[in-house]
Image 1 (cartoon, rainbow, N blue to C red):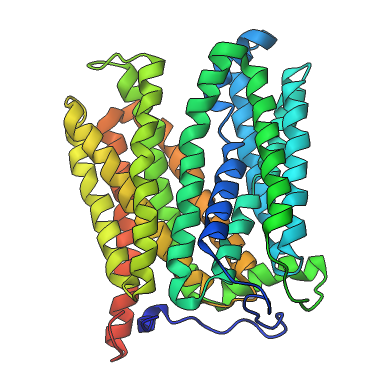
Image 2 (tube, rainbow, N blue to C red):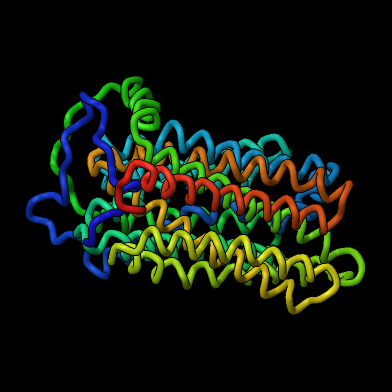
Length: 420
């Protein structure tokens, strides 16, 4: 792989971390078939987070609760996912992933069955929350793909698995709506449990084994995540960029439904839901972004993605009364953000191959924290300033990410070092 520019040169892992190790001896590494399997596993796993979103009206009616109370089911899934990022994903650095991933997915299967048979809204929220906790299997599979791939193919591998993840997100809402229409909302969770159980069995049989790694106590493992974040400037910088772009993304998708439901569009819920398919562009670009990263274009591609994202908000501003610029703007935002996200993960997975799961934990926790800030601020801004305020807010997050990227290059220039 081409040399990483200076400002993004990986730093060394803190002392005491487990020794690095590549693909286990005697295994074929990352074959095309295994890459496809990891992508499918990531998509099936992450889908658990999104099944409930199009079902909230039916759930509220079934349990005779308000829409706000029903919406807490989705909140429970997000809380569970956040907890899983912190508590489960780091285990990928010390446990055999061939056993860890199926075990986590078995937990997801059981949780979805609890959700499908829940007698109360609280039990449903518990089941969905636990399913969210176990959905982080996808964030164990992504660094595993980076671990198995040859260094020159790491970006392509990560991009392909991320494509599977994004397709899983897209299809989850659509499939859930279709199944619920025909067979009721509980059947959605039954179908989800069956899909997860099948992929867990396949992964248990097909994932390659790994060499023994140095034993690390669980508490020390969690502390090392903080140590990594403290000692790795590349990780901190890329996590900050990720947080800003995900905040911008959530501003768009949080307030888009309000815009489309009101004047001049007055779209139905079904039509609004179809806008989610615009995210297919992000799934398509993920693989290409990874291949460019493998060729050493991380810096240029990151700038391109950030510039596209920031510039798209000019089109989104016109989307207040024009459907074409709105659609194009949403597609460009998604393309830009997914492009940058792949570049970020490619770089952080190169920092230390023995700590990729923990690096992913530090990055993704920051990433989702940024998204939470974007979602929370989006609703408040729309209530007071409408779509125009949302555009300004989202553009502000995108420009903040661009400023962080530019700042690292400026520091390198001031130190008379090659521009990153």
